[in-house]
Length: 213
Length: 143
Image (cartoon, rainbow over all chains, first blue to last red; front, side, top):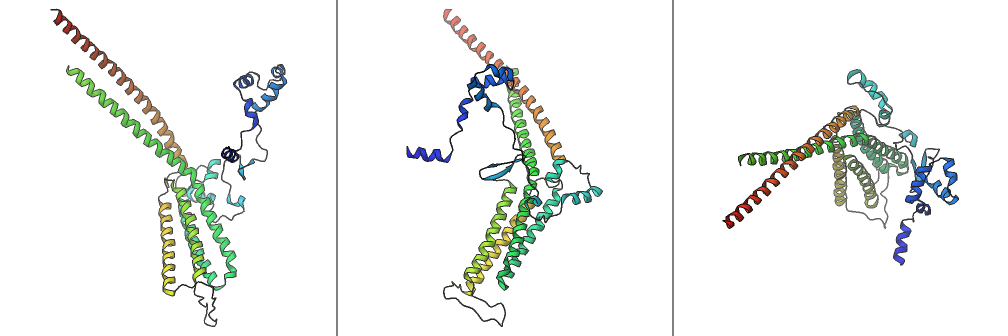
């Protein structure tokens, strides 16, 4: 018995109103909806229960709390500047401007400004950041050797670089997901093709055998 | 196996840990080397001082580890998928693959239909055959 109690304390029990979500009620809700007239015909108890079927409004300030963290309703990567971290790598806008003159035109769209378009640049930038991370660590070691009380500034710089790298990598994620999707599709296509070929081969064999009879 | 980006981020975190470990090691085991000649060598009876040779060796190991990790990270960065394609190109590719997939699925269903028909044909054929054998047997017996 005590074991069960421990487990139930891990996962909080479902909210009590889930028992209102019966087949009967959901049917009633589909019929009535928000129609006041029809709702008036229901009993008070039913009305009370049907209230839970109406979807709650989204939080106004665009974020909510869950598991001790603040989450944004729109799932997007906040800009570094929004987190109060200096952005060390080159901004995309300036890069695309440079690129536009020479290579393919990059259509600016809201999605692009979020995820960035030039991934070649990202690679270069992340390598640069990696190198400066190493250099900064070396500097930190140097500082610690001479005057260890001055560590704080350097440590903070290392922190900023590390956060920058992480952020840069996270910006790359949508690109990687698309790439993974492409690979998945290609695999599936190949699998289906093989399957089909096999079926057709067997059919051909059987047909030729039958023809010989 | 996780995706490359996650691997990269894990590597980065590992590198940070290596940094910490290295600094920590130097802090715990150094031999109070004075930073310039005018300074006197300090000492602390409670400090754990590692022999110079051993110390050098371990520092060497720690640095090698950090360098290896850096190389690993660089290699991972280089192997990130689809560096030279833009998001538009990717979306186009996804679109065409999707169409191909749907087409392929239709073809597959056709192939399966063909297979089913053939299966049925073979089945009736065997049935006819066995019935035929049976009949000829009974006929033979009757005769």
